[in-house]
Image (cartoon, rainbow, N blue to C red):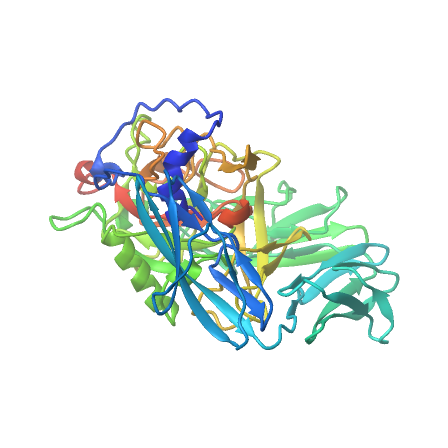
Length: 583
């Protein structure tokens, strides 16, 4: 979400009467090779134009008037000019009112000339014969007898519209933008919303699945887990609808482990081979089980270490996977397939020309260097092992949670076990592990994207969100850890406050530069491999890593600025020159 608006309005924050946080102390002021990309020399901070609807695309009906008032910041003695697509000046005011007797797409340029520079932006007015509403609803809800579900709608043309909710018998049950369904009986129930204005009607239907009561459920995110010889496997199932009375029993290849009664199990394979680990949960009369296969490899950790070579790079990475959550800049990631999107992201970061935006919560990117990254921090706590470059500054942190992986099976792919790097929010009650969000594609572009999470919460991504271009389905799920958002409106200025340490694109203690960075320059955060942990917080003690995953860690929006989304400019192996040739 930090974009050209933030980058060019950064100095405005210092002009506003904002109470700024004291700059965090930092003993690790590193250079370009460690995670600081030196900014180009800037002689001025020019004016900034932001469209009030966040998109620069304005729909209006034939013969109806629309008034557009862009937000202009940091302009000293500005002069405004509006021109049509033929170059004719149509207004010299800060606002522009337009009406047309014919439909079509009309393009205009808004220019600001000020003492501190000039800037212009193009906008589009879509003149329509009719503005029929489009309606979006989350496709499925699940609940239980005696409980309720609030169904929220997303509609593109709300002005002058009426709402009508009906059940499967066509009985009218509501007339507001949202409807609360009370589950009185079990079964599947279909609810339809019709939204009508003078031009027509749009509708959408959702299904609510009602179970008689909450029922214990146990699953695994992955059917298999690999570990090298000599390392324990942390077996952590996804457990839902359990109670304080639920008891757990574990067995390996049919052999019970009677002392293991927790919902997780740390299993140390005695030798190389495959092990079927089964957990059985019992809650009253309900008993369910799930199995994960643990593969203990022949090789130990040291055998897979890839030492840097003469031609190794400390800054160029391979992008193995990228899957952003919906967001306003996701469409900038070009590609009809994930492979093309990975290549595009790789080019942007390796060339240090721009960033990739990971969208709302859960969006992620997976990268690796041409060598293993050595864990120097385990012997010297003052050392960072690698950095991830973002553009955070005081008042604008968009934290990305970081995971690391070893190439345990030696196939060169990130298909082994991810370990989260501990951060300042780890272990807090407001930090949710094994969390997931499902995003639903709206019926047309430029509508809010609705989402529902694994805890039953719902919401929308509002500012021109786009699905990744290579995804074809109508929904997709992302899973990981979510930390509590810190987004506030302070004296008319949106602020995303920082977290103490441990996150990418975050103005924390591990920010690799002094000062406030109000120009939003590309600067990294330092990370220590020694902070890799099992899901229960126990250190994993990795001697090196091969892959890094960054995932947007919060679900939040900052008004006109849109969703909070981690932005990544690149990665640096800080310890490459000091890495040993063998372990």
